[in-house]
Structures are given as structure tokens and as C-alpha cells.
Length: 210
Image (cartoon, rainbow, N blue to C red; front, side, top):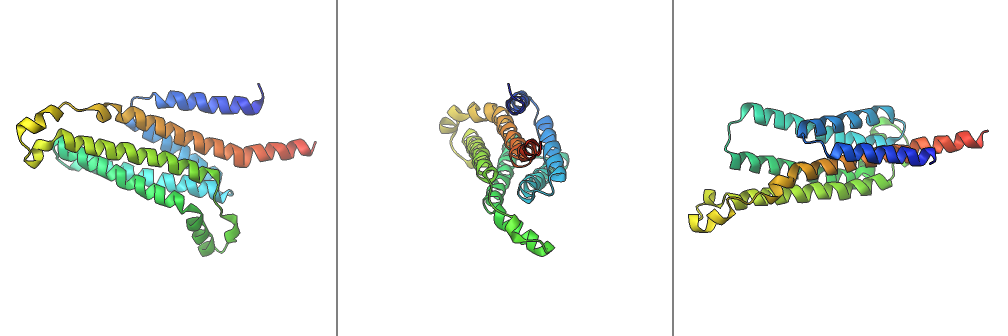
């Protein structure tokens, strides 16, 4: 097995193990750590650094919002879940928009800093992560909708109609596992992108110089 294949295998195995973590806090903290490391260590590669920075900023905002939400707000399970899923959906939408327009955002930043705007261009990571965060958005909207369905009585719907849906927890039960899988895919894409855009070319140059 070549070193390249071994590197990819390690990333896949670690991501698979990460996907099995049964803790939203651990999942989020690992993601923040990876994004922080990638952002700081790849500042010369504007495209991957800005992608990682966008995800890092949104993840930190999410962390702060939910820290305040859980610490200071008193809420029913219905209202609390509705707010959580709604905030997640809004942040997912922001990330999708930011990644879709990432090259334009990067050019704007480069222009303000006085650097050549040609350094910014779309890379495969942008498109891959748009698809991943579309998955995040789908699961958050589905969870939000299921929460409404489960609590129809809160809207004045009769008990006869609402009661059959009280035990609908299909998306709720799958929510954390799916989120962890999507987080692991995000980390894999970021790490493999760093390898493809920085590590691999450097290895090739070193081989050519021998």
C-alpha cells in the first residue's frame, strides 16, 4: 500500500470512528479543533483557509447561541426543539450561501487586504461541502417538521387527530447519528482537500527535485 493510499485510509477510518461518537458536544469540539488547525496552518492557501474559516465562524456562532439558549432560557420541549431546529436550519442556509459564493467573498477580502484577487477561485471542496450542508439542512427541516407534527395539540388540533402522532420520533432518534456522519464527512473533505491541494503537490515537487 502506497503512502497516499495509507493517508486516505487513515482519514476514512478516523472519520468512521468519529461518526460513531454518541455526543453532540464531542462531535462539535472535534470539528472546531480540526477547522481551527486547518485555518491557521493553511493561511497561504487562501481558498481552503477561507472555506475552513467560514465553517469555523458559523460553528462558533452555533456554539455560543446554544450555550446561551440552554443556560438562560426556560422552555418546553416543543418550543425548545422548534427553536433549536430553526436555528440550525438558518445556519445551514447561511453556510450553503457562503460556500456557494465563497470565491466572491474571498476576492472581496483579498481586495480589502491589497492582494491579487486572482488567488481566489472555486475548488472542488466548495461544491462537496455545499452538498453536505444541503444534507444538514434537509435533516434539520425534517426534524423541525416532525416536531410540529408530534405537537399538533399545541396548535389547537383535536386530541383524536393529534394523538396518533405523539410517538413519532423517527427523525428525532436518527438526528444525532446523521449529524455525526455529516460532521465526519465534513472533516474528511477538509482534511483530504488540504492533502490534495498542499501536501500532495509538495511531495511531487520533492520527487522531481531528486
